[in-house]
Image (cartoon, rainbow, N blue to C red; front, side, top):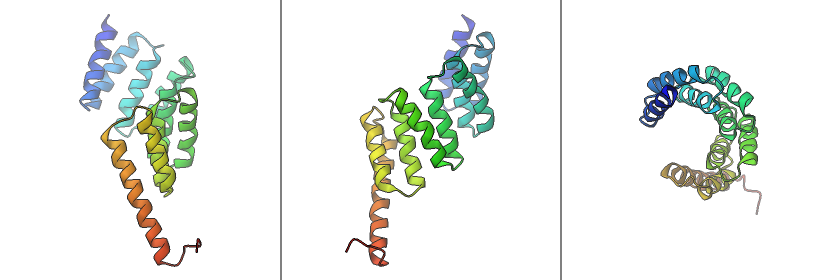
Length: 168
């Protein structure tokens, strides 16, 4: 089938971070199979990767109309909000995604990033550990966890040196 060939090319381009070409392939495949939630989601992923968040929402909504429990599309909605500096709103979507698939690492990683934005480093570390535990075993998660740990130490030192430590 032609749409399978196009979507295979789309994935190959996406893996190479050639998001323009990936988007073209996914859109062409979607034109032949408009009810394919995975293709809707991959068009959205290509758009998100290029910072075209508003346009990507249209494709995520289509994916969710086809399959309302699409935890990856729900995660992507949270990712958009996180990239738009709305960590509290993003967390709602990350929680929904993990409620649908508890061993999906990406929403935990997203929550870790959201907690980093909120400067709650201890909770960020916990979320990065969960992301790692649930299969996100890559250097990016380990780097973020290490950064959260260092930021937590620096924050604690600053609080103690400025007299803001109320624990004594």
